[in-house]
Amino acid sequence: MKALLICPAERPDVRALAEFVPLANLPLLGKSLIEYWLEDLVVRRVKHVFVLVADRFDEVRALVGDGTRWGLRAEVLLESSELSPDEFRVKYRASDEPDWLPSPDDIVVMDHLPGLPQQPLFASYAAWFAALLERMSRASTPDRIGLREIRPGVWMGLHARVSPGAELRAPCWLGENAYVGPDAVIGPRTILEDRVFVEGGAEIADSIVGPETFVGALTRIKDSLAWGNRLVNWRTNSCMEVPDRFLLGALNKPHYSPELLGRLSRLASFLASAVKRSTGPVKIHNLNHGLSPLLRPREELYSRAIQVTLSERTGTAPSNEQI
Amino acid sequence: MKIQCQEDKLTVSEVVTLGAANSTTFQEKVRAAMPASLNAVEIDLSQTNMVDSCGLGALLALYKAARVHNSKVTFRLLNPNPLVRQLFELTQMYRFFEIVKH
Image 1 (spheres, chains in turn blue, purple):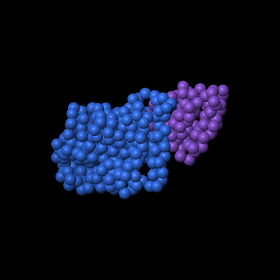
Image 2 (tube, rainbow over the protein chains, first blue to last red):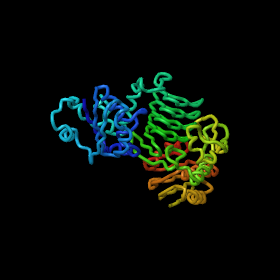
Image 3 (cartoon, chains in turn purple, blue):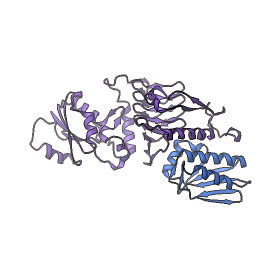
Image 4 (tube, chains in turn yellow, blue):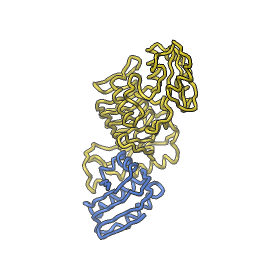
């Protein structure tokens, strides 16, 4: 059987989602959108799939390959623009060949998850967030090696680590190799994609953090989609680039330089003047090791890390003496 | 940048950026303009299109300096645009400042 998948090209309402990868490659709970579709086609006994790409062809082809990973034959084809299913049907299925999936499943635009056409993914950032949240409870399938529900509504992927004192509030999802630092609060309604690093003391709720994203200590992410240094509030559609990587940044970019070390020293003075959230003093330690094993491959780019240790949070306004 | 001092109230406006390049100067100028009998500080961020950690540090330093004058001083940030407000929410600055949107 044959089928054709149309990769969404431009979706103005969710422009920020396409900044890092083409929409077809977007991760949804550890798996890309196109992977969900290819798996669905395999279940429907499709053996030959055409994948039409109008945006970043090489990246989609790199992910899909020739389809052998799914036991089917995949042809990734470059198109100059995204046409409608009917237009592609005329172009690719000119004659009434019998060995195609029946219409309309024969040619599909991947702007929703398989079986959920009533839940468009790219209508808005809020729609994207809602779709992933809804999917969370059903994403644990037998092929997800290492994924386990450690307690109702809390899923942890392979090699995900949670430090002592961190709090996971259901529902929440931690992807593969995700790290949550001490006293961080994750959830509710939060997804940390693969290889997210959350420093101690951070708070993330009603949000999705994209893969290989660093979330700094003292930050609070709420109602947002955070990926690299891009922060989108899905309620207001406000979209910003966070200027300081120690707050929010991409882990997969080699960006640690003397300039950043200079900023780290400014971070120390910024944090030292910050009103602490506890009754104890703010302590600044100089450490001679990297941030974590997750970042170890990048340790050579650091000469030292500055860590601020905060004692318990009181949440009360400090006296003048405490500042 | 415009700094106005009316008796016990200090108002700062027309701040376009608050970043590494100008945060020290901003802090020094505002601090120098603080009167002895300071009761309120208002910083109008309606024209501010960029704030980074250095700018936040300058605001916190000014907050601290203002409280040296008067431990009960009100310190308000007025009309930050959505992007600046996002940064304030990310860094939990609302814990220290009163953020006002007219």
